[in-house]
Image 1 (cartoon, rainbow, N blue to C red):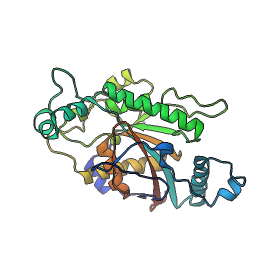
Image 2: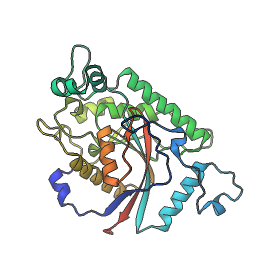
Image 3: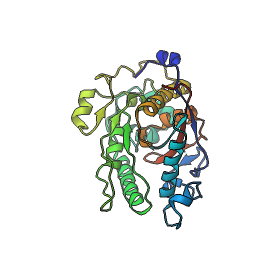
Length: 305
């Protein structure tokens, strides 16, 4: 992962914007909380490509949208790249449960720099049983929606290196079975350091070693340059939202430049989702733990290769 100082001097190749008008973002509660919506909230609407792709009006809305996305990328090749990114917030971790039990004020003043208490450990927090249930519920959602609505599974999986995101990614996507004859993308997630939570003193956001990850999550791959020990966790200070957004922009630069897949998945954190919203100009919202939302992102090419 590039240092924040290096990020500031990078010449961007893309300008990223969230594309509105294709997904509903219903909100509830004072924090604009968004749950996973039926059919991922895709708005059923006509597309310019429908006349040739679906002249009999027999295709599912998701089939028509994916065909439209394909044509969009083909039409604007060399000028822009469009990707649909399913962004999952990890399920409830032990740090979330502790904060809920003691309140945010006491959590911040007393517990965030500790590794745990007599009942649980939240250093690089694992999922609680509730968090595991949330992730398995997502697995059921994906399997049902892929079979009945033709909702496309991700063609590439990316995950934060923190344990709760690795677990969420694994429980959410592993073992999904599709109807006979339908292609199932291989489940071989890639660990991306830049997908991790905001960098600060919280022990829940300090990751374990690459050796530990390799031993406990052998089905995951590491991005090139991933280092064994956590050199980014901070013993003092806090990454600002703007710095975090710059880090997420660098992640998007990497993915848009080097990954040809147009439908991908990020398994990440609430803070990283907030940074992605800022980086792409998306309407603000807050994702509930263990839920997934779609981002349609345009990468306008401003520095051709």
